[in-house]
Structures are given as C-alpha cells and as structure tokens.
Amino acid sequence: MTLIVTSVIGLLVATNTNADNNIVWTDPWPKTGQQKGTIAVKGTITLDPGWHVNTSIGIEIWPADGGVQQFHNISVHDWYSGRDIGDLTSGKNYNVTARVTVVKMGTYQTLVSVTKQARAK
Image 1 (cartoon, rainbow, N blue to C red):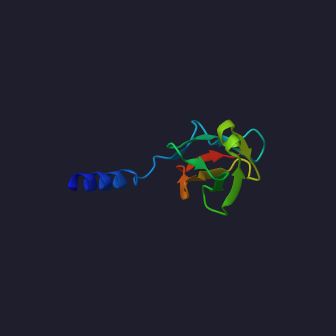
Image 2: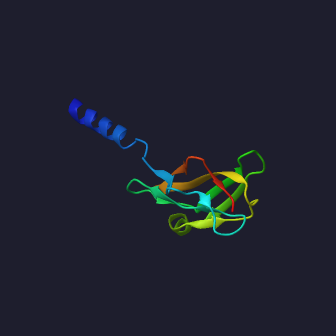
Image 3: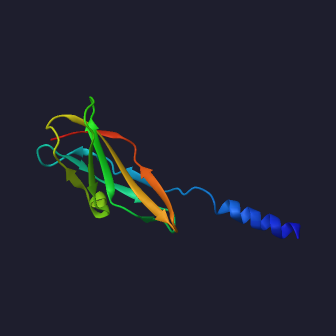
C-alpha cells in the first residue's frame, strides 16, 4: 500500500513543474525599420506540449534615454514574419520588449523577452 501512495505523490509532483515556455528575438531583431520612424520586430515562441498562445504579442517600446513608454499589439503571424512598429522619433534609440500570454487547461503564464535596443529609422 505504501508503494502505491508514494507513486501517486510522485506523479502529482511531476505534473506540477513549471513549463519551459519562452519568447525570444530572432537575431538581429529588433532592428531599424524600413520606414521613417519605425523599428522592426521579429521573434519566435517556444511552447511545451499542451500550451497555446492566448493573446496577440505585446510590444513595449520606450526611449533608451528615458521617456514615455508605448504599447503596440501585433499578431502572432506578424511576430514570426516580422513587422515594423511606428510613431517613433527617427534616429532615436529605443528599448524594446515583447510579451505574450499562453494558456494550458486554464493555467495562464506571461512570457517576457529580454529587453533589447534598436534605432528608429
């Protein structure tokens, strides 16, 4: 009987571990965009089995020397294929972070990329 209880407890612990989900920039993104006042963003999302993207990708941009933070939402398709984010001051350096919420059977997790810098065209 003790063996069965130990096995069940071990199973509960094993299924309760954190997922290795991740959102990362594709090198060399983020980078200067194609149009004036833009930065180009592109990346990938890695998910463990059963996890799914629940929302669009949130892009946070703020001047590297300080200032107002901007928020932009892009589709998952645009995240994988690349997209310019606009309304930025041309020639200025910006910090850029990407985030997304993923879900598995009612459990939510927010993934956040490392912050990188890019110059607006």
